[in-house]
Amino acid sequence: MLVLCFLFACAFVASDATDLAKFITPCRPKDTACLKSSAQKAVPFLAAGIADLGIETMDPMTVGRVNTVQAGLHMDFRDTTVRGLRNCVVLNLRRLYDKTLLDLKCSVTLVGEYTLGGQLLILPIEGTGKYRIRIRDIIMKIILDVEERIVEGDRYWHVSDWKHSAEDVSKVEYQFQNLFNGNRDLAKTIHDFANSNWREIFQEVAPPMVKAIVSKIIHETFKLFDKVPIKDLALE
Image 1 (cartoon, one colour):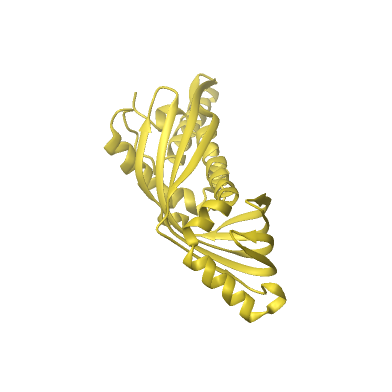
Image 2 (cartoon, one colour; image 1 turned 90 degrees about the horizontal axis):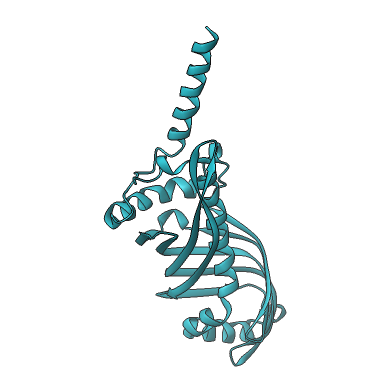
């Protein structure tokens, strides 16, 4: 009886590990079409969060604080909510020997609290209050350095390092409440300028926030690799 109970428990654990990744279609490393399709199917599951894997909800995503100076502009974004990641499109996914290359196209809306001071390209800016930024069709390229580790006889992926870049974006819209302590004329000048020169401004000031979002996506995805062995994620 004890032997039967032990075998049943082992079977349950193995089945449970497989069930945790049932939204993943295992693919061979060179089957890029399968990899892309499998990753796309996984996007809404990961974005919704998976409690059994400890993966937090990423749509909406909460970014606590991004406080930095970029191109002469002091930026302090707080309590930001990011919406739209569940609709990201996987443009490309490739698995190499020790790297994974992922290209994503996403449209997101960021809402939160801000404080700005300094130069916005050529114009002075200052203000504190609520903000909203809409980013359409941003293409993010992510490179993961991947290693393997053995845990109780099973092989798992481990991401040792990563880097990213924002290659393109089709449109960005900025809205900041209470610029210049509520001066509507100055605020209109800034909004007209920012939304007419959205690409240049995005390139100058967006990298810290984009990095914070990508960092959280990768951190949550790490949890999938920590809990689910390679045999349930890929075909060798």
